[in-house]
Image (cartoon, rainbow, N blue to C red; front, side):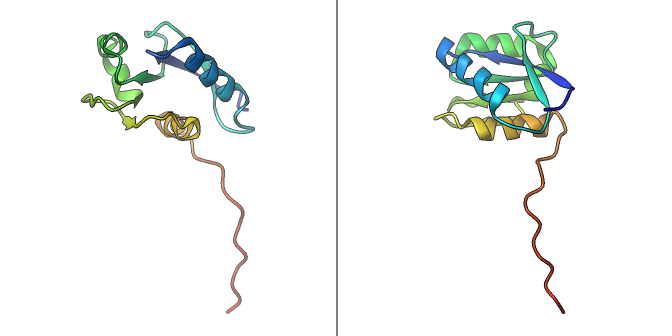
Length: 117
């Protein structure tokens, strides 16, 4: 994992969902950016929020521009978010979306053999 850690806020999830996010993000990959979880929205560089949780969305919207670097999960639409994904939560898609937000590129896949001409 990269030495650079991106500060990530999780908003509106159950304790079980938070632990699942944290475990996946700590152990879910060998390469790419690392994410450090924070409850301080002013330190967060990006966020994942439960779009169906009114209190979580109010906190995110109050944090200003952070909503533009947020991935929302759920069915309630909110203007200004970078991306919204439906439930059930697919952690791999969430991680890919965050990687895009922080400006990383996915690992290259296996190279295809060149076709002789």
